[in-house]
Image 1: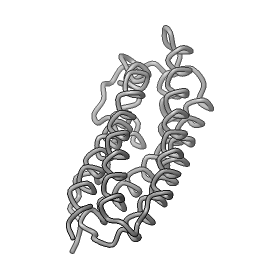
Image 2: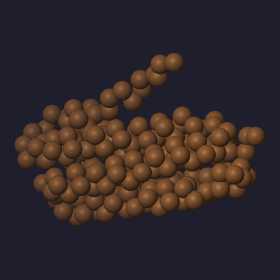
Image 3: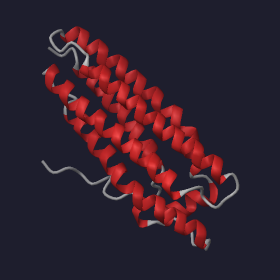
Amino acid sequence: MEGTNPVNKKLVAALSGGAALVLALTGCGGDDGTNKKLDDWAKKVCDQMQPQVKKIEDANRAIASVQNETDSKKTQQTDSVAFQSNVDAYKGLAASVQDAGAPPVKDGESSKTNAVKALNDLSGAYGALKTRVDGLDTGDQAKFGAGLKLIAGDIGKLRSRSDEALTKLQAGDVGKAMAKQPSCQKTGAATPSKK
């Protein structure tokens, strides 16, 4: 049966967008302005964020690996583990930003507070998705596919919920300082997978 395959692809597409959001924090390039305090803040937050970003990428790759899977149970198990990884990773990202403190810029405290809240909200939302995917009926492919479709739609909504706060956190000089940090630069994102 192909009942869940198109839905799995929607789920992967929705998750890919979520990964892009987090990777927006890990910009490329930089400028050579010299604000030592801001550079130190950016290094601290970037170094702590890197392992969490990798967890999210790995979780999303796991979900992508079952996008053509016809075994509902395997899809459910893979998605459940991946959602839990995202719960932990987004919580870790929030802790990284909280631990680094407010960036030394105008409105830095509110940007930090908003970003921490958005990341914690994402962690909680992925926890709710894990509970939902765990509760899907794998014995009925039509019901399972319908449940996955709803989950994929909700993941799409998650992206926009946190986008604004994260964009504000990395705006202006903060974004430039983060982009200069090796641990905040995208690495291997375009590396083709070996077969």
